[in-house]
Length: 366
Length: 83
Image (tube, rainbow over all chains, first blue to last red; front, side):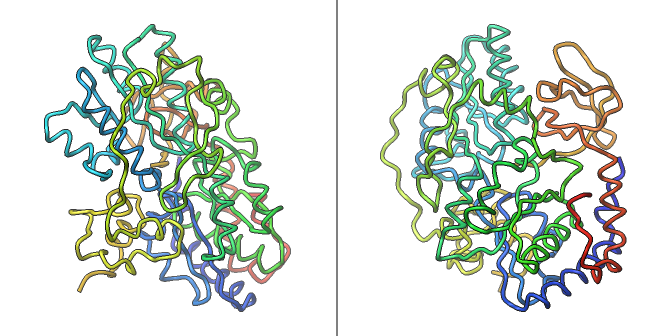
């Protein structure tokens, strides 16, 4: 499949021209927020902020799953790694994220068995190879990742693999956007909506943003041309006084999402409240494992009680995630806190706003 | 973390698995979420699973519309959403 057209400078220039014209017609400041770590990286890496008209600001929201994970959840993952007979597995991004007192990487250095896997199926295969150990997969992620975890649990059940369990710290996106759309501190005019979250859930779950809050949204892909198209479609809506949820990423997103994936999630998970770093508890934005799958629920199998969580001193990750503080406005940015020596989660994860600003712009370099 | 990349399904294998080609690299992925995928389809792969079959026709149509952007930016009437 040839997707080079989505990086074509000629098409990009055409879109930039169209963005300029539409923004000029609007004639007022416009704040557009993306809420997907992959968009954060795409915008920073391709220098798209630099080509925006003066009155259009692109903000990064709480789109990096690792960054929005509350310290308390990271502390639980660490505590799980300290239990005898346990192997903790997770995606690489989770390793260096600081909890209140430690990180999985530090625990590994201290001799605990913590392993990075590429897929939850790798963790499942590990459980099969190590029948005498309990293999826990620390599951952090949005709707894109949740169906994979559901499928892994069902595969474990079907294969009779007993020593495999999940610590679910999943979060779901749409209701968190309501908290942002309603936030008087930020005043967001429009949302670039996440491409691959929407691959799973479709466009319908965002409709309330347009209808209740009058905030337009466009589901956007990840190539530079995709992002420019998304910005153009949003400006067009604002200019015409419309507020709708549109799909710009039609090659990867159907309006109804992926019904097979949604059914798997529904079978294994149920909505619970979730604590978002920087935002707080948002009812119904977490996913807990249903009681009939308790056997695969790590915190049911291995109850742990970490000490009370505490926040990282001086780190403004919470404000950065809400678009209130830009990464380079944090006093730690580029000084105490860099991707090599991160202090807060927004600098740790490669998809964090701070890491993206640090890697791809000049801010914070003296 | 929600990164997913297009891959071509090369062979469908037992246990709802498939070998896919990702820019010349062969990987095994699960078809649990896309049981309808057939050999030759393009799928979006995320962490060892095919999330969705990619619609190549939509990709080409979108590009066709986007190529004409400078001309139709003037023209108020055209919506991109149909692409």
